Length: 262
Image 1 (cartoon, rainbow, N blue to C red):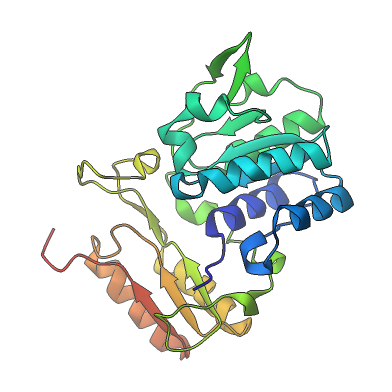
Image 2: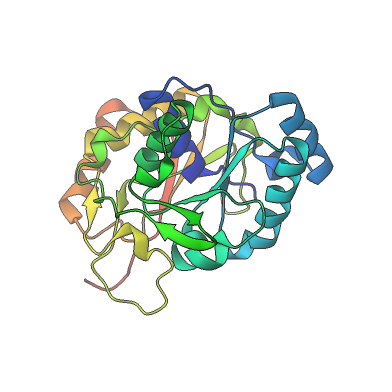
């Protein structure tokens, strides 16, 4: 299947909400762009800042995109974020061409970094940003996790062609992804999202269904909820269900859940 880059959509929404910068989002896999195609788009856009989502299983592609971006537009500031950089920050900072990392939840620190860079300030003063200083990794103070997820802007799906996304698991297309909560109180040793914290934080049912309704209005037929622990708060699940029924929304949605009680 082809799934939209949800993390980048959240970060892009933060940039639009809290800075004066213009934002473009390039989903190379969905557009079937190779590194040559990415280079052409970078040269055309002439970006001041390039943000690249980095997961361990996409690390090789991320490194190639860093090199491509620097070659196509050398003055661009290259910043990486995502699960891999939180697990291996020093290793990631040592990649040639990487100028900074955004750690933890990316919406506010990336927007703050954009404001710092455009304003000529030192990004080493921006919380949750890592850079190299005198050849050594330097990380600023950590930023508290967002306690009220309703305060975050909705993922900015205006930046994508939503018709490109599909899944073999879906009954209808196009599809999208969403997250209605963050964090998990469990202590699984294989957790790949420790940067989201051990406190279950969740959006209100109204916020969740507002996003679902927006997706329906965009012609999206099915939503995959990527929450780690969607059913921890049972009443909220029922509230989401009831709000969907109240608005008579016609859509399919799927969630990852645990079968046994918590």
